[in-house]
Amino acid sequence: MLTFDPKQLGDFCDGLDDFLKEVNQEAVYVYRGFTVAVYHRLLMTTPQWTGNAVSNWNYSVNKPDYSVSTVIRDGYLGGERLGFVQAGPKHVKGDRSEGMQLSLQKNAGRSKTVVFNPVFLTNATSHLGEGYIALLESNPNNFLRTENEPGHMVEKAEAYAGNMQVLSKPMTSSFRNLRFADVGLGAALVGA
Image 1 (tube, rainbow, N blue to C red):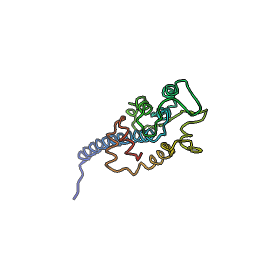
Image 2 (cartoon, one colour):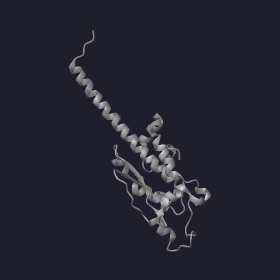
Image 3 (cartoon, rainbow, N blue to C red):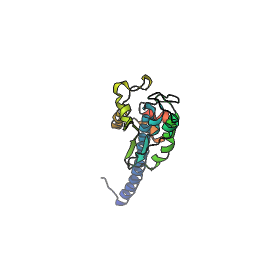
Image 4 (spheres, rainbow, N blue to C red):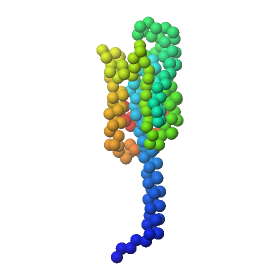
């Protein structure tokens, strides 16, 4: 014979509720870490020259952030512009340049508000009136220097994010513990 005591069932349900709260919090940590890692991937794979494009990646929660900073561009050009010949050093994708550091600094702490909210990774820079990221993404007429090719950083990040259901246990553990400043680790976790 099998007997269930309603009092024991109540204790069981309380224990199950506690367990589900812990699982839900763990899922929040993994989701948060995953969105940060995809942001890191975009930083590491965005082609660079001045660092202006990479400095303008925005990580925001609940609504898109289309703000644009011209600090890098203005400092780089120094008021001098001769076609595509510009003053200042040339950077390549993956460089931990001041542009990447600026993006990390301005976005630091934003991931802390993520529960299961929508997260937006945006970049509203422009070049001669056109979306600069779209230009870098499509690389028309081999616009990019060899060390920055290929483009397609957004397309590849979207494809990876679309496959996030195939995460392994070690990866979920890494996402859970990912800090915003760990750009190299975050990018590596999502294959940059």
